[in-house]
Image (cartoon, helix red, strand yellow):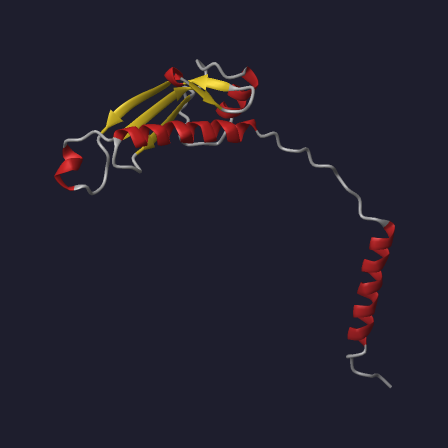
Length: 138
């Protein structure tokens, strides 16, 4: 099954390795015998993503990406394995989609001459106000 990232990029669900594991936390006796959490592993280098996007994902400062370039995610928010599976895949798609957003380059701007003059005039007025507070010398 295809997971759409953007209108032009999609990945196959089989590229993500999903493994059912036991969830942490409270849950009574059920937590010890039911593997409802999902452990997702997505190898960025072996994926069908464009090379430019792979480089961007590997360069992210994300603790979930291992040194080998594998994105590791644990989904255990829900009680059922199927809901956690869908949640893990959705979070993977959101993570990849966030990397596709191109940041607009910053355009350097210059302060106008009039703005500089207004600032200096304000400073002069403030200085004049403070100089009036001094002791008068005869």
